[in-house]
Image (cartoon, rainbow, N blue to C red; front, side):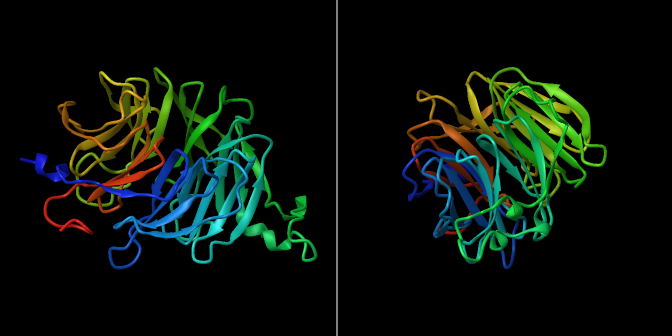
Length: 341
């Protein structure tokens, strides 16, 4: 019986004072260690130990809700997108903001390519523009030595836009595929689009039904076989969609559920996925069988919609972030792990 795996009490991470909008794990860095970053409407993204959920630090500087936060694979950098019309890139060791990237509207999505200490960042949001910033060309330090608050335009790293005019709605998520030349966006016009950075144009798109929730890559793909290998999971309306991220608009399967789904995460090796409910009446986490498309178990504990769900890079736990302001860690392996003894 696999049901034993999550009949364990989840760990609850407190600290945020407003709804948690997004969660993201790093890869496994050294000695089975990995990290978790959370975005929140309290303006203050937080860095945590991914295994225990222990607070490490808070990134201070945004003046508005933070909609998305991501770590570089090696966890040396963090990127955040905010309602203060900026994206920021942070040093995770010092907590210092290395770059502030000004936009003309709310930034909803940020993404690093999957490489150590990345030098480029993709951003998107309510401007409906997909932008690529070159972080190697500037630093906030160059803004003005006399006035640290004067971030003049010369300090902003150069950027270029990809596919002007194509997105018909707010860009809610950006995913950098296993191939660094390919980017995937999910927008409020209910389209998932594949982009080639070399030609700066779309190479495929797929229309989903319903409001787009999360759009994320399976980050457990590194371990074991299974579905794995860069599967993109999208929550939209009552359905979840699974795509081969390497092949534009290649749908592996979609699963219609009886619930409104806000978030989804796939565990490719175990051939299971987890969904989070999107309404105040459905605050439950559900584990599903990928092949049989049936609900295996249900996790109670949150008191609001679950806007984000993500598996740890070793696949042994998953994290959920909710409107209720908490993050919960749920064990997804048999036997002891982390703080579960």
